[in-house]
Length: 220
Image (cartoon, rainbow, N blue to C red; front, top):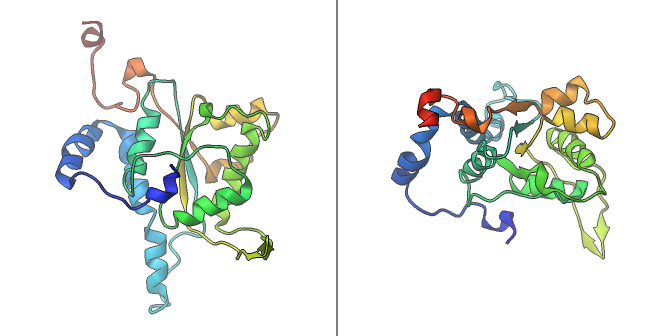
């Protein structure tokens, strides 16, 4: 099923979410940040909506950004991103098998929301390379608009797209290292627009970095 088709659907209760999701995440710096970012994704659009009647209000952000959660398998990074996805629909993640145009369409479908991408290790194609896909995300999401789309394909009109969308993704190693593996160094601008957030190893709690579990407890 297309993750975009179920956007906005709800299931369960707020009380259960608070008890079984929010309460445990008090012990996770990464998850707390990710949920905050997911909820704040709608603020730029909210401010922009009110600027039409109050021109004195400043533009909240000039462009959006992405966040990549990197860490070992079992550290909870995919769970973290599914929790963010669950803020606005079912906890599903989009894959990395996209073109620049289809990524723009996904971003537009989640305007003023977070676009959650699956872990990079799920992408197994050799062409286009993972390095290319990361670069497309890094460039397309902050731009907030498509570039010169064809006015018609098979006699169907296609308008240029605009969007205010943030991205959250995950990977086994930092995306700077992935880029280097494909023969390129990310620019400072790319790093600012798509920073990497490293999580501790599973033995140290993974995303639950504030549990303060002693080594003796782990051994027992």
